[in-house]
Image 1 (spheres, rainbow, N blue to C red):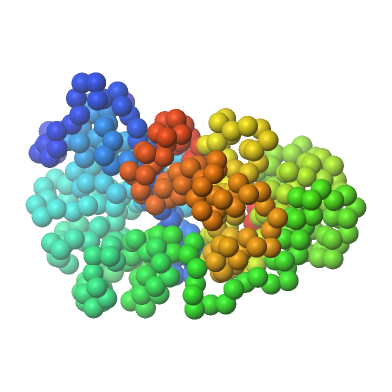
Image 2 (cartoon, rainbow, N blue to C red; image 1 turned 135 degrees about the horizontal axis):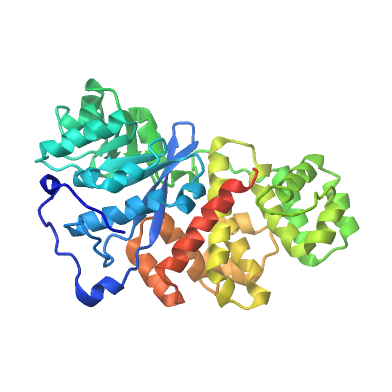
Length: 430
């Protein structure tokens, strides 16, 4: 894609762009991190591409950073990426000079937030461009940095300010927050919130939004959630694993009509794409078979726990993990073992759902040893695929490259599976 840039906007060449044969190595892995509000509702995702991979330098991009940013813009413009995230916001971290890229005009302004990484000396042309874009409705965020003062001209046009909470101790973070709250009103985002402790700190300090996977971690201060409804679903899963007769399964379902309703709603959702409406558990088993019914029962574990925004976020992430894991290994695994890929993905968050250690969460389930090995020990045929999926959530670029390479996967294949997993997880009714 050819672009042109205003000559006044050209930034100094900050890093030599890869040249020659290196341009052919385009391993740009897509990663994501959720952004949640104070009530644990996912409102968007930050998307990233692999930072250190050699990139094709498109015409008009005068630095390595601009080349990286240009590929991020293309990702956000791409219809598949937008479809994957539904109505959620897409955060893209870019250099201020990227505002001058004509591709910015093609971004869906109601969906994309450009998070600017500021530096001390900003060209007035960039500031004027930021003002013009925000007047047209584009949302901007400003990443916190020591030299970013309340008087920074970008402060007045940015809707969000993002702070990496790992850069401060609690007292320094509180002081920084107080300083920001004395200036123009912004929505404040805490980034790298990956533990319950970090979440609680962010809430106490008054952050509006929190970015990270804290909701996938155990909550030590709260009790476990292994209640009767969860045990009933586990009993059904074990019965299917043991191959009991359909009439025995139907009788078990009749003990809990709510489970029947939930399972039928899942099976009849657009994500499955069935041409007929399934009206009973017997009909479901006859049409789908034991393996597919087992898959959907795994999802009932998430909806059988008390409904909350946090559990909804966890379920969406578990759905994406399950589909992503299965898609990565489908063509590389014997047909008799493929079903374990999905189960491994979805059960990888069972400990967080039940708020108990994984070994205890799995104790009530009759699972293949290959699934248990992956979930408890990180071993066996399913483990590398699950590790790759989790690395794509964590911005762990080195791990992504190593794991993908070990599995013989390239960036195009991994990214396609990633986007399709997000599309599918958003389409399932939960």
